[in-house]
Each structure stands twice: as structure tokens, then as C-alpha cells.
Image 1 (spheres, rainbow, N blue to C red):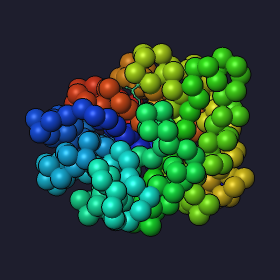
Image 2 (cartoon, rainbow, N blue to C red):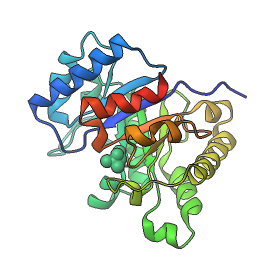
Image 3 (cartoon, rainbow, N blue to C red):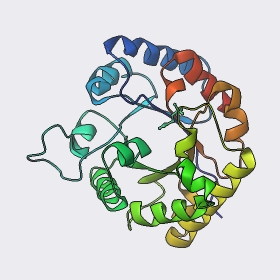
Image 4 (tube, protein in one colour):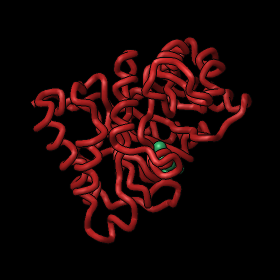
Length: 251
Ligand code: 13P
């Protein structure tokens, strides 16, 4: 079996952050430089902050990513941003299919897959988000939902380098509630099996992140669960102290 992938701690700033937010990113970079961690670190700010952050983080190991991209390379799509534009601004990753986009913009698995394919075509790593709602969980459908979203959203040609999965139970996002480590282990184990049966060695090497109310206080426990290869962090990625406190799980 392939070695476990190097972990990734990714911050999703969502629709938060003005130019002043660069200072938080700079502080995180400073702390990582002083006390390196055995993980990659990524910040996905709003589109408006990608270029300023790229400058701030110029000499740092912190990677940058987008929170969404359009499936097309360019054209008449008012308000959208393409994978090529993200790549042009030195992004290495882009989040696709976040549950907030699936809910707010009605994004389907088919659309999410097209976005992931657009990302891969520009040599970006697509972070494909999946996860059940509370109602689905209450009906005992968690594993079915996760398998269906994986089958529908992950590109056919995905590799360990081109795709990362983020399991984010919708009911855990921004609520302070998290699944138990046993629940996380079960879902991540199923995701790993699905990926391995579809992509072989690449499926074993693909990162599977956990997201949903990850904080400094629970990061070590969640990150030590089998098949958890890092975190996708929302609220706690906005403050350097909190984000660095999560990265601490890998020091
Ligand atoms: P919170 O960490 O704020 O729960 O958000 C998780 C998330 O949605 C990251 O993409």
C-alpha cells in the first residue's frame, strides 16, 4: 500500500477578509517559518485577496487557492473566475463543490466534476467537497450520500496529485459540533475504499481532509483518525492564533 499522503491544513476564508487580513496570513507564515510543521499549509481567501496575499506570502511556504472556478477557460460568464486566472495568480489549489455553493448556487455533482476537470487542466489541485446534511444523517444516509457525491463529482482521470477530497458534514460547518472520531474514521474509511477501488494506488495516495468546526482544541484528535490527511478549516482559519493552533497538530 502507498505511504500515507503528506497532510494538508487548508484555510477557507469564505466571504471574509479585507486587505487588512493580509496581516493574519503574514503572522501564520512567520510562525511556520519559526516552527515548521510536517504538513502543507494552504489559504483560500476570497478572489479579491488572492493577488495581495500572493505578494504577502511571496517568500513563505504557504500555498494559495481559490474557493471556486468556472468550468470554462474564459468567455461571457459575468462574475465568474476561471481556473486559468487562479493559476495565473500563483494558486496551486481550488475548492470545488463546497456545500455552501451546492446549497446557495444549486451546484450539482456534474457541475462540480466539470469544475474539477477545469482545475486539473490548469495544473491546479481540485479540493472536491462532499458531505451529508443533518436530515440525511438522521435518515442514516451518510454513507450513501458520500458515495454518490464521490462517484458524481470526482473526475474520471483524478490522480493523487490532482484531486484532494474534503469530507465536510454540512451539520458540522460553523456549528461547533463535530462527528465523533469513530464516525469520522468510518466515513473516511469508506471514502478511502471507494477511491482505492476506482483509482488503485492513486486512490490510496489521495488526500482526504476533514472539515467542519475544526479548532485548536479538537485538531489533534481529529487529525489522528485513520485516513484523515489534514483539515479544511473555515472560521478558525481567519485568525493566525487559531489557524496556527490547528497546524500545531502536525508539529
Ligand atoms: P468551519 O470550520 O467554520 O466549521 O467551516 C468549515 C468549512 O466549511 C471549510 O470549508
